[in-house]
Image (tube, rainbow, N blue to C red; front, side, top):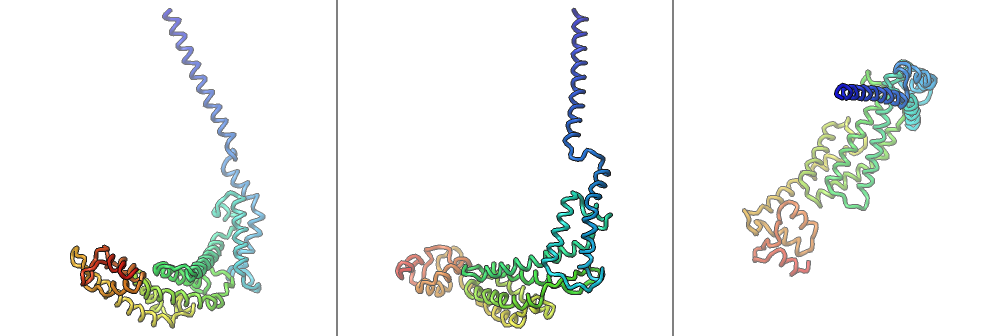
Length: 320
């Protein structure tokens, strides 16, 4: 029985090994069938290149016609819509080929030129989104000062980037022959930017947010220092900025005095200069009371006036 048992065990182990090999082979065959392109990578790549060669050949002269110095410049300047259509065609070719731009360069694919067009179109779209944000900020909704300053920062930056790409600058940079109507865009945007600046100053007077005021001051100083090279100059609002800076300086001084007047000694509920708070409560000036709270001038409803009456008492007494 011993030899027979050993023989059976050996046979069973051999069968298990054979079965395992068969399963591995079947799995390998199955995975090969699942591969969308079982051919060698080089063969597949070449096949894809051949499929899109005609499309690439048709795209290249269209791109070159929009690049300075590439082909005859007798054609009129391209419109932004034409650039977008060209980028869509290039994207469709890439998606159809399932190859990278580097793979297509062997067919003459204009990688650098297309990047220059993408950068230009992207800058225009960014500016347009900033215009929309500015219109929303000027709407009926009461925007915080920090939000208005953010929109202004984005507008000046977006315009500077767009203007740089549309002007003759670095000779090493590819220049696209496109007419973005920059002068018309600037003229049309002047009232929008001016209104946004007016709203910022109005919010400064109403909402003494020291951090936002400092951001606005830094933004305006930056534009003034750039002078004729600034986005503010091209957008026609540079002459207003120096006067705005003076107003900001006055507001900053007032805000600093306001904050210092609200400093409370230790944990006392007595304010060192309470008249501003009590005047706001008596007249029902909720915005001023909220501003005092934000700046730490009022942390308790038990804060007392010189007569020993609390904020809560005054609010009830004057029906506020």
